[in-house]
Amino acid sequence: MMDLWITFVTLIPMDVVPPSPGARPSAGGNGFAAAIVGGFFGLGILILAAILLSLKPKRVKPFERNTRPPTDS
Image (cartoon, rainbow, N blue to C red):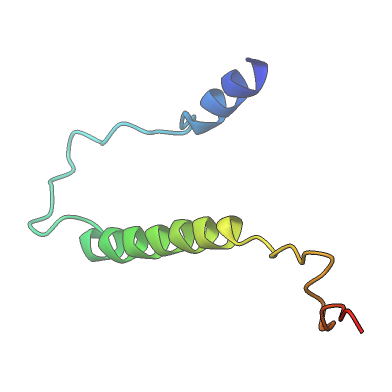
């Protein structure tokens, strides 16, 4: 439970400054394209991590190691 609380607290931005009253908003927004590109980049990292975590080595059964089956001769 403490880990969850620490994670939540670290996600809260502590240095958010309110906009000044004289600032006017720009027409296109600040960094819209960068947010889109960064979102795709982050999504790609998450997908890559999920794929790598799902890969598991295959177990080799003891009698499937390049050996011939025993013959009754």
